[in-house]
Image (cartoon, rainbow over all chains, first blue to last red; front, top):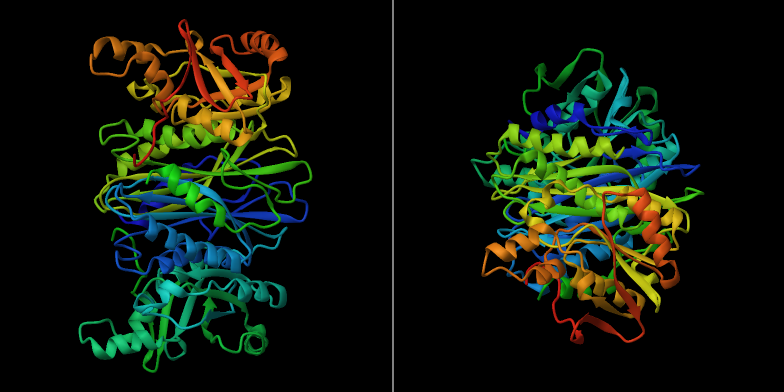
Length: 310
Length: 310
């Protein structure tokens, strides 16, 4: 059983109450906590030594990544983060200097994003360090951007470049908070999420939630230099396109807008974020499933994203 | 370095912002998220296999305990819990039936407490299961009960009975949510917290935060039957009083009220919660430190609570 099968089995039985606008299944939970002009966002994300970082990863970068992943989920709702709790699982013989350095990474990113770190917990995890970040944020009331809003005819966009993030970018990426809020304020975005497990996997969440399909244009997929380099230098590595579609840890924005808005979005983005690539990579279709079009024609895309436990 | 030294080192540098009423250092963080009549409570708590439960612990009870611990922290602010996220660290070969049973334990308690479970995360923790619960709650605006409010002359109270919780009670205790809200609504409570690491350790947090001392009456400490039985049957076990003061996992309420209110509190509690013991165990003093009075006189109490990593 993989992560997604487990979640699919557990989700239907979860208790709810009147505060819940949107529970499990989107990038963050969406709650009405009584603020007249806002809905709250609520999210947790964990990194584990040996899985998401290594014993010799610079500890400031580990801390940065731990918080940045959760911030990316708030960006994925076009939200603003406000407060974080940090749960640290530590071996009994932990190195206090290393833990302090992890906190420096967390605190520096939190300060830059105007997020308060309001405590947390330390507990024992004998074999490896685990950092779980719990995050609160908000969106203007009624204005969260969900996975479920994609419509037939929408153009599909992705920020940045995909694949090969584990070569380095996964440790120092900047969550796309400003870009997502700009999109929400200036464009008619129908669906938004962040890519953490690979485009080919994560796009399926939008398709499933929105009950639509999609066609990707092979030539339009923005493949990162790291993915190209790895494919060139390691004969056994995935081809670069495969890496761009299935590597995890991109933390880029994936969103849809009406087809007629596509040029306006590209132009506005280029003015606002001239150093960050934005690519129109395909379109939303009534035909279900995910397809890839190359020069020879259109084929079902069989690849999926990174699956934990798989 | 133990848990408390580590936290003391990390806490001063944490970034803050205008939403923070009370950050690290109390049972929950206290935030102003814009609701006109409420402040938000925010808390995480984790349980780890081999530390807080064992591989053969009934999985429903593991789930119950994971959520109950966090609920106890909301009770410790006299709050009402609203929504939880569950982060699951799982070995790759996890047993789906066991995980589903843990969720049944979480969901049953959540439903009873009217808490929505709004998602969470699964990740890999190769050697052992970890469940981290992140919890949101609320208190009426301006009415949280903190650790820092104890005053000289206050009477010191504890609910229930202490010590020996690991013999069973730690797996099926009911968080004292109703009792804490009753206290906040009907009594002039100055300081409130829950006991999770042993009275002798946790009371020091109230003393430190309130800049006062305390004197405990040995004869008044409510020692649990489990602690007495263990002391009787195991010659190497802690004496029962020692267990009551230093065993962890009690999850009882510890609070102070003005001395003149003590009888009224005892009477009201007895009417409202006739099946739950309430004990007046001592008083708050101007003299700093923690002392224990027995028939021979008053001595400094050297024992501390349970310390992780110690």
